[in-house]
Length: 288
Image 1 (tube, rainbow, N blue to C red):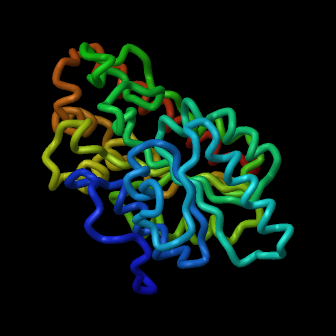
Image 2: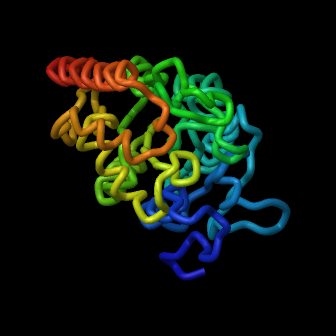
């Protein structure tokens, strides 16, 4: 493979898939001295099965609940070998991070293993047909919530603020430059790092396939997705929401929200405001 083309072309991801774009961008930063692992998920399309893989780097398909445990073992093996020039990259969706893989992620962080965990969040179990996850937004229709999810999404970013991560950040496929900057910073750290990336899914969110980047940018502008990073105990907000009322436009562009009423809309906006106000207060503190 070409030196800077470490993820094969012609993969069978969905048209407009942001997950594949994030994978390509990640390897443009990390380079060939990277070992990646993926759970059964959309990213399994990249890893493949048997003797075939789309990655141009060492890769392994883990079980769904244990990717961070696999990463922990690889990280320790590299440490024993004195290999400080290799990055261990976990690459999982919200199902393998928020839900089934959460206990394993918590353990890897607590033990302090050197690895970069990337969560590409498409807000549902998309690989198995779009079932709700704890990352699914309030009101969103999925195969298992046909009338709309009744609960707000799990705020994994605020949960992980209370863990000993060496570096933590959120990012968006709508700003690849910002994602690459944060990933480069994470790769330079000697400990566990977590980057949470918004990856709007055209298939599951029900919007035209040529609008993935626009939807991602709108999510940040309206405050539905917060952009920040935590380093050395300090939180930095990277981009302030322009107008929370733009959330109406954000919801209207996705058919998964076609059944929500004014009450649900008001709750979604109120939750977004509340999370941003909390983040602002945390950012004002000198140290967490």
